Image (cartoon, rainbow, N blue to C red; front, top):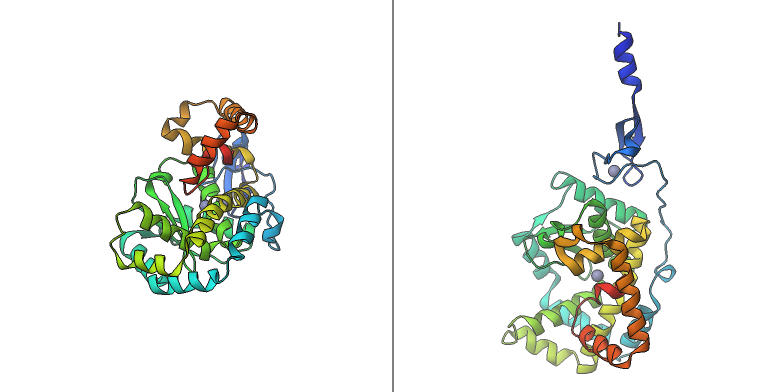
Length: 304
Ligand SMILES: [Zn+2]
Ligand SMILES: [Zn+2]
């Protein structure tokens, strides 16, 4: 028979269902004061509701700059068939072989908390689970690629810098690319960037790109790519359901791991100042546009 003491000890713990992944967790009564996290997805426990958007249309959140640039891109005659042809040459299988060979595949048993976060992002946005790889790479980045069957890749350099909520935000951003039907264009744009940045110009693929894609196709593709990022930050917001998780992730992208010593409110002030100068000073706008045009992602300060 349980003694009075042990039944009191049992009464102090109770079960809380994780708002994100649905796992039941046994917690102490004062868990809200501590930093209790879910045993499955590692996200903070609270009894607040987490909304799911199973019938979400991309038009509900896609950034107007993304729709405008994508419409301009699609208006170029022959672009879709040119891209499909390009990617059939370079091949989805090449992408798959690359990551199966040189990255770690996330499964329910391999990095289960990351697998749970992917599942949270997919169920919240209503997307089929893609394959997900972690790759050792100091470049702070994550991306989505593929043609028929998308895959998500996250670099170790990014993963190491982020806490669990911020990691969810990045995964949700990538799932947003799948939901918003960006994957075909994104894969082509990444290929263009790879050819432009790594000394691949001698490889046959560089010649194929030149042959298949006109300069205006290439320009429109890269211009759209940066704008597409803004839509996916919004998709990430639909998953984290807290704008400051996204803002703090951007602060880490801008300031590195040193961000733990930085003041987030000051960073938000910096974003407002940047936008004010951009709107009011012609020269600031000129340089911001020139510098931004060379990037795969817009400035973190803009994304905030
Ligand atoms: Zn959970
Ligand atoms: Zn992105």
